Amino acid sequence: MRVPVYLCLLHYPIVNRQGAIVTTAVTNLDLHDIARSSRTFGLKGYFVVTPIEEQHRLLGRILSHWHKPQSQEYHPKRFEALSLIRLTHDFEGVKQEILRKHGELPEVVLTDARRVRESVSYSQLRHELETSGRTRPLVIVFGTGWGVSDTFYPEVHRILAPVYGPEGDQESGGYNHLSVRAAAAIILDRLFGDRE
Amino acid sequence: MRVPVYLCLLHYPIVNRQGAIVTTAVTNLDLHDIARSSRTFGLKGYFVVTPIEEQHRLLGRILSHWHKPQSQEYHPKRFEALSLIRLTHDFEGVKQEILRKHGELPEVVLTDARRVRESVSYSQLRHELETSGRTRPLVIVFGTGWGVSDTFYPEVHRILAPVYGPEGDQESGGYNHLSVRAAAAIILDRLFGDRE
Image (cartoon, rainbow over the protein chains, first blue to last red):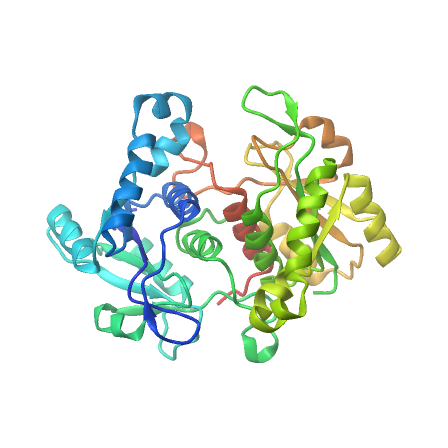
């Protein structure tokens, strides 16, 4: 992969069931599962974004355990995956770290379970990443809770089409309430998985 | 989908890190995530297999909570997904329930992170399910821990190819240590997801 690709999991600004903007809690399994998927599909880093200081302390403790030599020896695969994780307080921190590393701000692609008119398809984005001479970094953003608030939209360049099963969207009887761990795995596979 | 498809998560016979046969513990998130993925991709049921009586009691308690009218009202999407779950003590129970329902024993397709010589590809199985006149039920089996013990192999008709990212298998520098939740999501998407 020529293009450096990052994943970003937002815990703010998120909407809750009632539509209000909230901060969600970071969960241990989101760290592990999405780090393993990010590593599998060749991503350069996995940003976990939360403004809450207490969560940074907690995550710092969890990650420092996994960064110990004993973890590297006993759980080398976990160690390798979790070393992709970067904690930031806000999305500005994500952009600045990518800018520092690659000399260029990333393109921001949002994933959303709702259908948005002008979404980019997986095959289109995959084709573009595989064949164009593009080097601009890409960050794929996932929300938690009931999804990313539209106050985040000014940051977004493109939106990926929702993931559907054989029954299609909700109006046609389909179900699109995947966990963020499952959605992230599927979306990375659609963009970067092997095609036999 | 004409063919009735089931997912089965085995907690026995599983190998541990040392290669010994063990029973793994059922985790709450495996229930939720894999049920939601199973529902999304139109599966007929999700079998959770464990011989441990205490785990059946625990799971029965968790599921009875989710089967309450309040859950249906307040979390209709969770309710809908979790209603796919069936608990059995062994794989024979899975086969018998499918036989009772469809009058025919299922074809058993195992997923495995290791490469096996004669595996079936996703496109091959997908094509077969989409185009043939087949009606025989299919059960896709996932392991926990370090994978399904080869003592289970006499039950297996075919094995699916492992899921790889762009770096390929471990010998070529790739990483295939996805969580079972991520692997199940990807495999169901490869077989039944929409293709834009």
